Amino acid sequence: MLRKLRTFASLYRELGLRWSAFRVAYAFRLRTGLVRLQMPQYKWSDRPLETWLKKDFRAPEEHRDYSERSDERSSRHAVEVRLPANIPWNQQTAIEEADRILKGEIKYFAHEFVKTGFPPNWHQLPSTLPTPSADGVLSRMADKHWSQISDDDVVASLREAISSHEGVASAKNASQRHVDIKFIWEPNRFAFVYTLVRAYAATQDEKYAEAFWQSILDWAEHNPPNTGPNWMDGQEIALRLMAWTFGFHQFSNSPSTTPQRKARFTQFVAAQAERIYRNIGYAISTRSNHTISEAFGLWLVGVLFPELTDSEKYLSLGGDLLEREAAAQIFPDGSYSMYSLNYHRFILHIYLYAIRLGELNNSRFSNSL
Image (cartoon, rainbow, N blue to C red; front, side, top):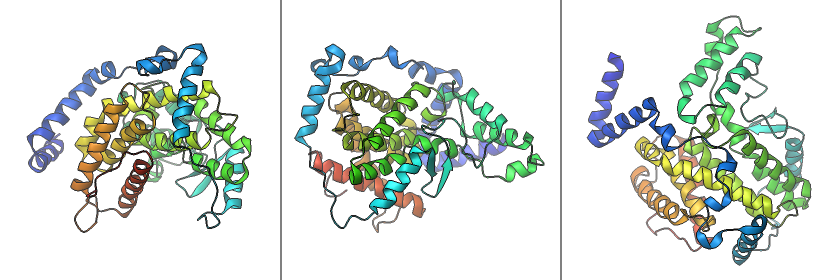
């Protein structure tokens, strides 16, 4: 307790009264369950697409009207996709990796393929760290409100499960193993979508588009709004939305992309954007790359889904935060305030993506950014 008080006192001196008051209030909201009241768990069917759309976008007849308007809007920005001769990736490699994904292998952290099945179990450890008891821990967490799950609780529970599993001699050995909630989050970031898109661009094989839709619909079935570890972190949601929307637009003319699927996809996007927005204050309080990535997630949805009721709000707040945080977190010499090459690369990816997407959609950022 004394150590925690000293840490808080140090943070108070460093970050000030306003920051300290927010974090105390946020901790109170978590402990008392106010966060659960403000962002309740619900079923997808409780809030169908019509509840998310602006009045003139309401869609009768199985969302046909919505789909036609969406197609018309997309066609205004459509560009014929042709692969240039000097593409910086190997087409055959993309096809081979995409086929591995369809056979149930997903590359973790852009490094190593792991057998997961396809679609994967969205709440399971990769096969490099499996134990029956650990999977039981994760399945129990899958039904909890995201605010009732902490990174530390997940790691502690997984280490306890691993230490009790045959083949691990002691808790000490378990504590030395690298166990992180990011092992659960990794497939939920949907980085494999970029590989499916590359393979589709190279072959026009419909199986890659269908795999995209299978994974989206399966994820939604097993991750209802505000429920489980995959709703815990706004940055993870933003990364997922980045991959989802990329695939959605690339597969938009595929026969697999039906009006009903487009409608459900928009519903899924809207719910995740709302989750980021309602908790954006916490991301801002971190003064880190989380602020940038979550602001980008809001801005992305605001740009690409203007039919949503809150699209202007997301676009304005996300854009303002991206401008402000660039000035606050990137030093005049171009270095990054978190003193990490990985985080530096990460925020550069986010900003370059946002700048280019803004240019394509008449939503440009300032020259200073």
